[in-house]
Structure formats: structure tokens, C-alpha cells
Image (cartoon, rainbow, N blue to C red; front, side):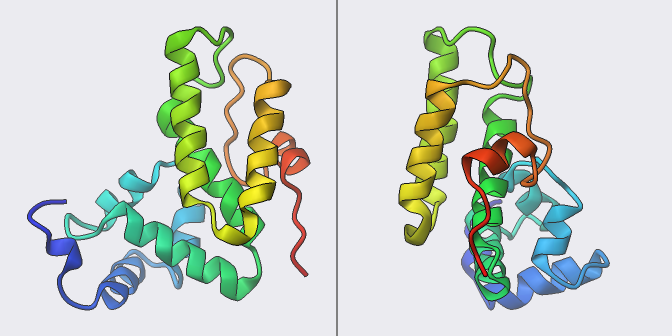
Length: 155
């Protein structure tokens, strides 16, 4: 993204135009076709005038409409873990790896909607208290381990 173009014009219309140009009827469908791809990479794919936070906001709006916010929250964690820990969960939480995990979990907390903050905090605490096996890389929001930490509750 360069020069602030992402903040000019009708942001929502631009997002959906780009998604439709790529053959998808929703931002969620576009993102689901790219599991575990970091948000900034999704934005880059949609154009140099699209920001990652715009993709995040659009995905949240769609999740709220479809009552799949918990799945959205898991999806964001997957994308942040892929960005911070591309080789998977570290076998040792030394200072460098602890920072990478903290960065992913901290960003996740910041991106989690208020309605899910407490559940996400508890899930993050559980992830640190009982870490997954070394090399674990969730490939999407339906990862079995993630669903045990943060099960769907929407009706």
C-alpha cells in the first residue's frame, strides 16, 4: 500500500469490486480460499490501495451478519500465527520465540471484537499453559485444537 490510496473513495465498494473481479461473492469466500494467509497478504492481493485493516473490518462485518464471529476470531489467530510463526509452534519458548508468540497473541487480542475478548484471553492463556506440539500450524479456523480452545457458540 502506498501514499494513502487505501483511504480514498468508497472503501467498501472497492473491496467488493476487487473480490468479485477474482470470482468471489464475498470477502469471506475470498479469504477462505486462502487459509492461513496473513491479512496483509490478502490486502496486497486485492491491490496496492487496500489495507489489511480494511480486509479485517470487512471480514468481521460479514462474520457478524452470518453469526460466525467465533470462527472469524479463530481465523484471525490462524493468520497471525502463520505470519509470526511460519514454521509452526516452536519447540522451545526461548526469548525470541516467546516474542513471536506474544506478538501474534497481542495482535490477536487487539483485533478481537469486544464481544469475544474474554474468551480469546482465556484461549490464549490456555495455549500458553498447555502449548501445542512443536511444529503445529493451524491451517484454518476449523483446526481441531483451536476449536477446543475456542468452540463455536453462535446460534
